[in-house]
Amino acid sequence: MNKKMTFEDAITQLNIIVNQLESGNESLENSLKLFEEGSALAALCYGKLQNAEQKIKQITEFEDAGGDKSE
Image 1 (cartoon, rainbow, N blue to C red):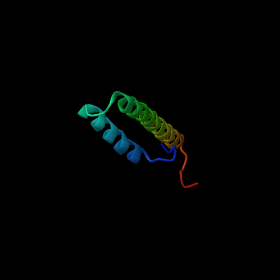
Image 2 (cartoon, rainbow, N blue to C red; image 1 turned 180 degrees about the vertical axis):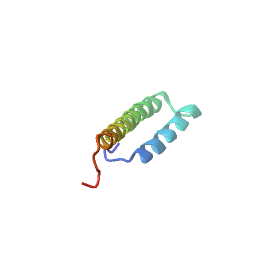
Image 3 (spheres, rainbow, N blue to C red; image 1 turned 120 degrees about the vertical axis):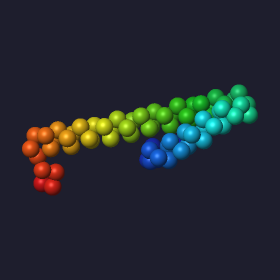
Image 4 (cartoon, one colour; image 1 turned 180 degrees about the horizontal axis):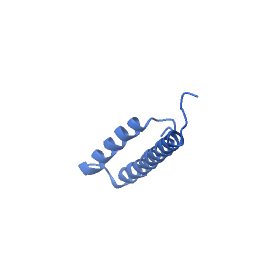
């Protein structure tokens, strides 16, 4: 997994992993590997969402304080 992966790419890959796991066609060993990869992707997505939320809060607080984002 690439830390520079976009949120959209991570979600797409996570969906693929979920589908593989739900199919029931994977071995136990491969299922564990997929689960680990999926967990890492979910954590990456969560972190990206938290960063986006923080940026939105900063922007809205700045604008609420009378700031001009073009300055």
